[in-house]
Length: 194
Image 1 (cartoon, rainbow, N blue to C red):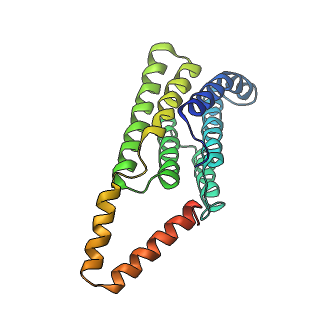
Image 2: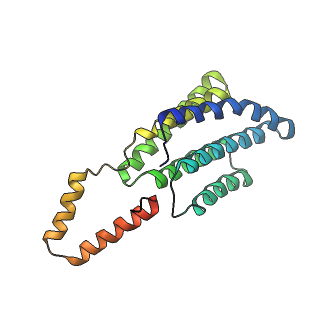
Image 3: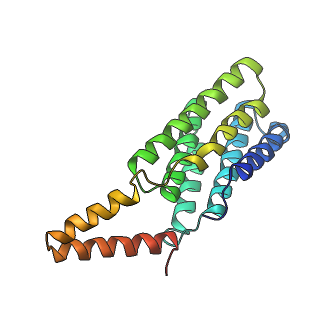
């Protein structure tokens, strides 16, 4: 990862929140209110995904993952899903992209999913109480900035080393080779070669 910090997450949350209302006003000139809102939120989600991809140090999937995620967003708009379904797809896309880019354990992915759900709920509450797109986007993305505190893996170095030594004490050369290959692939995918 390239210097992803809480501060950069807060800055992107503020920037995307600030541009959300003018984007909605501009889209409302050309589209009906519902389509304008859907388009605006898809553009905000795309902006956040671009931020995530710019901070990621991807080797494998450098082109495929962004294309897939943007295709999902475009497909969701194209099929004219309900507004709530579109919001869920956007939140799930953000969660899945962040999980693929950042985490090595299922627990970290689940914690990140809970963070996305919490942000989604806060955005719905903000919309219900204020009716402001700015406040809704701000509350969702502000909570998403906290993902930097989720550990990549909950597997400690001691546990990892003990698992490796357990497989090596059994004298299983296949297990050692498999572990070495998995580590090499992981380093290649994350760009940590050397």
